[in-house]
Image (cartoon, rainbow, N blue to C red; front, side, top):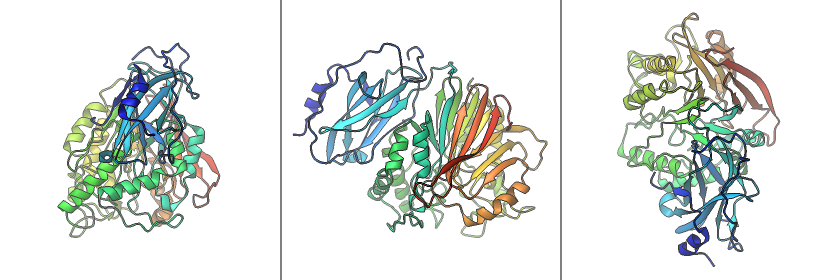
Length: 515
């Protein structure tokens, strides 16, 4: 029979060291599984399995700091369930260090999250969830180094973006799971509101309600490749547009005037994002959800996660009723905001305000300039090229930050560029470097496939581009050097297609351009 909450608590004894996340260290011993003595607790018998396996969406972890990490799962049980989560120092769970109850309710879409606290810095841990005799497989997570500590071992980071499931297979995620980096960053477009791609088409209408967005997330997270990628490392996640609607801008749905209907839709989409991601972000209120935040990795790097969708001004250029993706700039391009005033002010404080070697900015749309044609003829107005004044502010802040590296997604293709104070002047000040990840599976736009070489020719700051392949980027971050390895899938429309490392780029610490 199913255990009551009192029976669940009775199994815990004095070992409940995990805090609920519904409302919102010690000496360094890493960076792998701890070898120092740890306090452990006795294993328990979870009992015989009752019913079908309820953990159909796997598990995930995210937003680690030096003493804690967020743990997440979903259960196919309603209306309200009590789970257990265990954290161990080894994959076999012979050294269990924590056990605690976790709630999953209808109000959270039957997702459960907890923050494992009191952990050792810079240490690998394993975790699993249990309910009704069912136990998830062991999943790997880790904590960050303590403040002021530079780890002896390099940090490996997987860099992902754009996972339209219907457009291709998730071979890139299989490769990431096999490589098993220490950390994964996702730049957005984790789910797509429209999924009628040509490889795995789905004619479900785009969601507009909370139940429909929840169903979309469940469809994506049911995939074994995605579950495996989450099970090897904690993730840092932000959104882009497709988690809500294509190319929406602030409160503008991009296909009509702002309205209370779209406000409600955006609120539903934000709520679903919060429910299905392992973040420390507080539960949303109304139709807003602040997701910009920092994650410090000792004194190696500060991750600064930005939101270029929720607060941006509507793109003013183009004919009434306003807005088009590609076209000439207008005078307002120099005055509109990409981040919103509050986030811009916050960014100006946190990006320079640390002593780490690197400043790693995780955001959505391309920062460096793409010049398609001469003069003010053709720009991609949806990216920072359409927000020139805001970009100048961004670059001024980055110029004051320690060795900036920007990680970007959105355009389903691979780009590597120096960031300069004036993209039309090759002798202007070097600001930093931008790595744009290809889509995991999303199609490369046909017009971009042919334009990549043209953009490169007219843009000396761009070091390399690849506009045909899907894949991911493996970053290796050390105190002296950063390397970025582009791992591309031969053909994402073919299941199990080969993946190869095709290009590697380097940045020296303290040097604000590619080596």
